[in-house]
Image 1: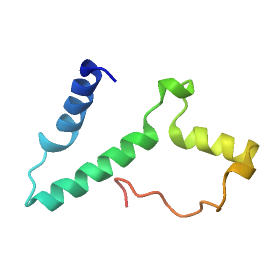
Image 2: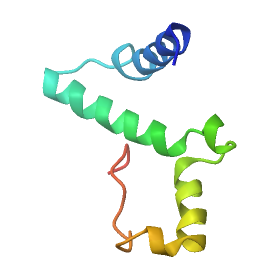
Image 3: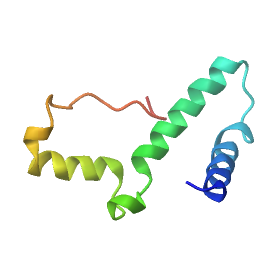
Image 4: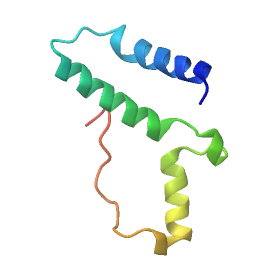
Length: 82
């Protein structure tokens, strides 16, 4: 990742979390950042994986390469709505 990509990601995070919200304490900010990053990681299409979302990529490879995956992942993924 070059500096331009890092700066763009920092601006994306800032615009989505710090700028529009006021936080009571640092823990609340940390919780919101964690939720945003989890949501972004699972919903953002990835260029290196030929543009599927991470959850789509895992789902398709989980069925075709089931021996690489151990436990059955039925539990909900933490994110903005949980």
